[in-house]
Length: 377
Ligand code: TXA
Ligand code: MG
Image 1 (cartoon, rainbow, N blue to C red):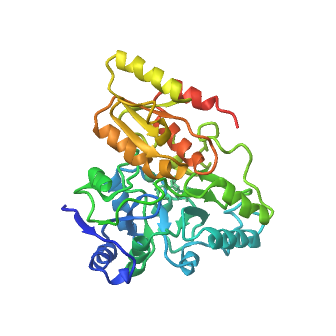
Image 2 (cartoon, protein in one colour):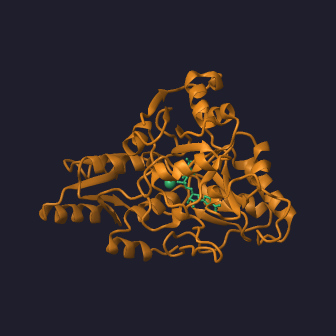
Image 3 (spheres, protein in one colour):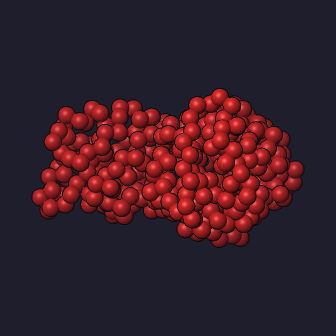
């Protein structure tokens, strides 16, 4: 199939923009549309159409036991997707008011935005969305193009990140095409995404609620809201590999396959260095062994890395690093490097999501994995 590419910008009356009208037509006809969100590009299909959703798995070559996030544009649509009436078997939470209160407070604070909530799945939603789980992951993206597409389509949109399974998520339309050209119907090009790492996935069917995947909404901000409601997140949950989630007993679905160790991997081997000294030492050792080495660096590491190419500068702040990380991994991969070196980041704020993705991308490398495992809170 030929993949249509439509350019789209601005936020005035986007719903009537020809690109949105065309994309909504494709969604309603059961096709696949890649679109920008504030985190990464998603690969969307009508969430209420099981055949359309099956195409997502096929295009991405994603295993069917890996559940998808459903995207909505209006809070009222949450009620259609979830089932907050009969919780008996579905949640550890003591009672319904707990879950309703939590949901209300979290959506009020963080939606639209990079927080995905896992809730009991409603009867209208085809099981394929959730890989057969009784739960459903829902979020409201904070991006005018995503919102206009959902509204113009008139249906909730199921969308994983628009990359081949296991590859780095796309933050530009070109990244989407690099992975999926010819496998999807259309891509809406709304420019580079703002946050750059995926949404935080928070499971509200567990008591206490738990973060299944760190992401664009920080643990600290979620904790602040939960504390007000007398809830806390489980202690010691910060590290991605120290606390792998085991699959739920009755189902082969993975509770959050973002938790798979080797997700988000570039082609090159990624090595996480403790500091710039280790980075430079490794660089010369590897170069001595005729390896082609690429550097992912911060603005303030530029001087120390003068004349070492290829290099990709991520920026200054953790926001910059999150926004540019996947583009950097892809750029260095395209430059054909054998090894990518990067220095570790503190596990605070967005740093937790960044560290999580770095550790997963580095997971092929045993030593780095051990280094990561030795990290103490
Ligand atoms: O920022 C994002 O979340 C992006 C944009 C496109 O919205 N989407 C995204 O989707 O990252 P995906 O499919 O790449 O990751 C979805 C994550 C996976 O880790 C999946 O396991 C988890 O959400 N998930 C989905 N449904 C779930 C469920 N019912 N229970 C637990 N985890 C679930
Ligand atoms: Mg993904």
